[in-house]
Length: 353
Image 1: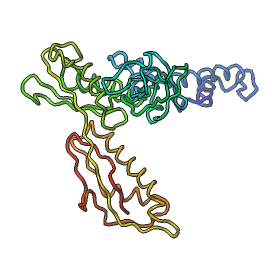
Image 2: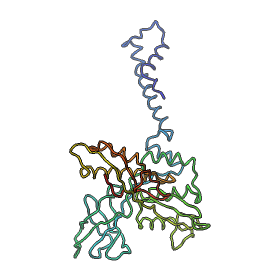
Image 3: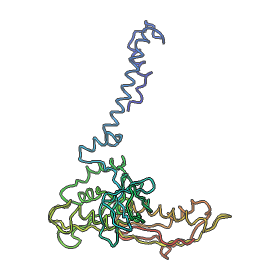
Image 4: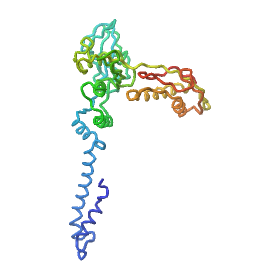
């Protein structure tokens, strides 16, 4: 805003106010007297420009955006730990600690499953541990322990909310007022629960007074039953349905469900570069398709339906090394885009090329 207020401009304006019969050349008494003041005024305009940017949510940096958002009750989501399913060959003490890779886990509670199955909470917050499965090593010796495994991430860990997400929620707050169990209220509060990446809300889905919330996890995948149960308890505990003991207002009987995965098999005709084959390209093709389907799944909370498009798949595969041409692509045996159900997200099935 004040880019034009340079040192030269300010000094020139000051010099213009000095009589021309005075020596104003660089090094003169009047020049040496005015130049430091002009430099300070230039710095003041730079600082004023910063203040103007930090004043408005659209241009504020994270620190001042958080202060601005707080005035509307919009608080950044904190980083949360991953919660894993840990399976042992014997009973282990609650509170016992284990390590896997560079992460430590603490055994938190027994899961109602056959065998010695527990919830274990990662001591490192954030999303980094979400894809680390395998053998656990006890930090302190446990007599008789011969097997300890993390077999599944029940609730994905989440990183601290990104600046642009805070900005979007703050600005949206002016358009959609969250109040007393309206749609925005459910979406805002359910999405804020650790492990939840998005939510759709349906009114009177099973008669008057009933509400259905369909969720996707923070990795934009189908949520585990454990996460669904945790969200159900936080929103409207099943044993006290409609009593208003959770997030939901009194007399709202809420059911929490998860998105459904739809398998999409992909068949296509590919021309490979010299020295390349399907076997060479297959891992990269699978990774590329997985990334595309995750991109689609991220759009699920704000979309009526998702559409897996042949053109997107072909163009992304064509960018891979070793592939020079592609065509005749089908999705689940049909040569057209695949339209998913309202609460469906795509997962990769077989890939034939």
